[in-house]
Structures are given as C-alpha cells and as structure tokens.
Length: 408
Length: 95
Image (cartoon, rainbow over all chains, first blue to last red; front, side, top):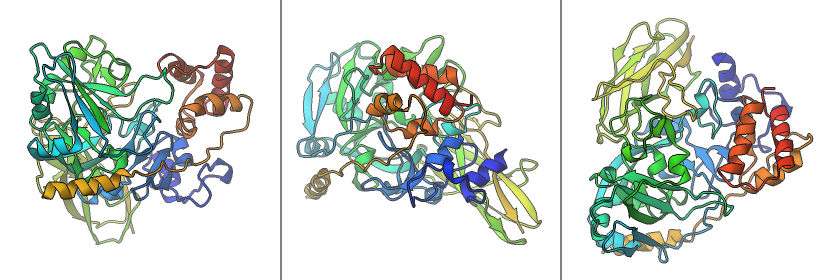
C-alpha cells in the first residue's frame, strides 16, 4: 500500500491517468510523501506566492502552502521557503508598515496604549530566539484513518531566528492588573463573511510572561515575509503555530477564559491523550483541551524517499529533530527497518526551541531495499511513537516514519 | 541609526504583494456542482474539496457542511445544503 502511493505521489513512475489530473497545465508535480489522501496527489502542485520560491500548493484561497522536505537540509529554513497557513480568506491586499498600529489593552490593562512599528523597535529591548514554527496539523494528511482538514504532508513547519520585543515587556507598559488569566491576540486577516468567527486566539498569562515569547518584527534578519505575518507576529516557542498570530493588531489582557470559536471549537485534543507539561488550564475541560506544546519529532531529510544508492556507497542519513522546548537528547537511527538502532551524531545546538540537526553514516553493503528509521527523544525522556495516537483533528502526529531507498 | 535603516526596508516591503492569481479548480460535472461552486466557493477555493477526497463519506461530508453553516455562518438554504452533500458524497466520497 505504501509502495503504491509512494510511486504515484513521488516518482511519478505510475503516473495517474490523465483524467484524474487536476494540476494546472504545465505545473510541476509536487514532491509529496507517501500515505496522503489521493486528492492531495491529484491536486497539489509546485507554485509560488509573491515573495516565495516554489512551495507545495495545497489550497489557494486562503493560501496553504507547505515546504518541500529538501528545504530542511539546512536547520534554519529560508524565509522564501517557509510554509504558509491561513484559515480565512480575508487577507489584506497590502499592509503599510507606516500606518500599522498595535492595540495593547483589555479589561486587565491599567494603562492601555497603541504602538506603531517604530515604537516596538525603539522602546523595548530587542531579543532573538531560534524557534520551530509548526502547524498543529502538520502531517494531518498521514492520519489513518484520514480526517478532514488541510491535508498537510511533512512540511507545515520551519525553523527561524525571530527578533523583536518580549511580549511581557509590552504588557508591562500596559500595566497588567491582578486577575488577568489570558492574553487574547488578533491579527489583520479575517473572515470573508460577517457571520464567520474571526481568527482570534488566547494564551495563558504564564506563557505570555515567558522570556521567550516575543513579538517578532524580523525573521532571519529580514522583515517578516508578507505571508508569514508581516509586519509583526507573535512567537510562542515550543507551542504549535496556532498561537503565533500573524499580522498582529491587538493584544488584550482578560480576566475570563476567552470563549471564541478558535479556542472553544477548534485546535483541541482529547484531554489526557498526549503527554503535555504546559497545559492551558483555563481552557481545559474533561473531554478536551487546547493543543499546546509540540510533541517530540524528527524528519529524515536525506536520503530522499526512493533514492538509489550504489552498493558499497556510504550513505549519509541526515535530518532535524525538535520538541516542545525541552531540547533534544538523542536521535536513534535504524538502517534495517528497526531491527537494530544506533545513536546519530547531534549537530549544532541553537537552543531548545530550534531544529536540532543530526546525521548518521552507514555503508550500503547489500543490494535491495533499505528501510531507514529515525526516532528522537527529548530531555524529558519522551520519544516518538511507533503507532499513531489517533485524534479527530489529526494533531501531534510523531509516528516514526520510514524512508526507503534502493541499493543496487 | 541601524533602526532607521530597518524601518526603511520595512516601509518598502509594505507595498505588499498582490494576492496570487487563483488557479482554476475543476470539479466533476454532476448535479449539485453549481451549488458547490457558488456556496462553498464564496469563502474558499474548491481545491479544499479535492484534497479532502476520496476518504470522506456521506456522514463526514454532512458533518463538514453542517460545520460550515453552524460554526462558520455559511448562508446555505436547506435544499441547497442537501444538494451539496449529495454532490460531495457521490463525487468526492468513498461511496
């Protein structure tokens, strides 16, 4: 089953019949992994948004584009290769940074104020944090059974160096009063219809006051790409991308749990199903709870799926690992489909929120197919799972994933 | 004066990119297609339907259309909603 999908999806060796093709004329087949819904293979194509190189286009309005796996060969993801994810199609056509304003206030703020871009740059210490931004639904398309939603493969994630003021410093200027429990954030993008709930999120006060939670004005030393939240977005290291509000316009301190649709009706997982240290207590109920910190995970970047190696050749297995901000302790690699495991070499440590590169070399000494596995563990001792922990929205997929190569 | 330099860069970028031209998404020609194009396509591109296939069935497509109406406020009259569910189940479902 894997093999069939793999061939159709990646190599094109068994090209789907012409009448199945939904790709634009002349568009390139997207490099997708195996195991996705057939509709992904029939529809996805390589395409460019303004300011981006070619990414894997899954949907156009709103735009949802994932990063090809090959772009993770470097642990910092290039801005013009960084994935794009929107929920609602009411995206401003342009944002003039000179006119842009951020409202900071709410019932829990004694001294609400409005800041412009220059205020945020000049009036607050600028700090940098290297952190993985990953959609909670990254790998949703690999759920078994499949579940509705954007059918992401492996690339709804990236790692960047973010720079800007700490959220806690900005909140301090607003004079937080006792009783504040959540910070509510909104961005300039919104719904098409008046009746559709705007994309608004909240984070617990403790996460808002974390030294690493910042308002990014720069990404990898450049202004934020338009489709990654220009001119400012919230950075919530360790937590899934749903909280990293793009095109930030409003920060409100509140005394009650925020009850918007995107908190109460979306981005939730069954309570207790996943190991989670940083929970969102004021949003939790007996049945379900907000998805918060990322689970430990890894990706084999090379060799690419289906690579052909010569017998006797040294193969460098390389990739990245990440977790919810506790740091990667080890990555185990198997080149015999799990029969034996070896420790990979860990590369440069850019901080506990960043991609940790790793590699492992072996000699392809026998002809035939080789199934390579990688399994990351973090400093809490958490490890990737061997079997899917199914949940209805397809979040937190960190199943150990095979990469098969052919030695001849 | 580094700050000023950064501001200049940002201001230039502010003349932001026009939205990408939307690729045409051909849905299967069958009864109900027009309702799908009009109602679903009002808020999102129709590639959403294609990528969510063919694993959906009548029950899951019904839940999805109900979510669009009840949670997202899509103004779809009942008869059209039934036609949309029929179309999606038959053409983009696992039957």
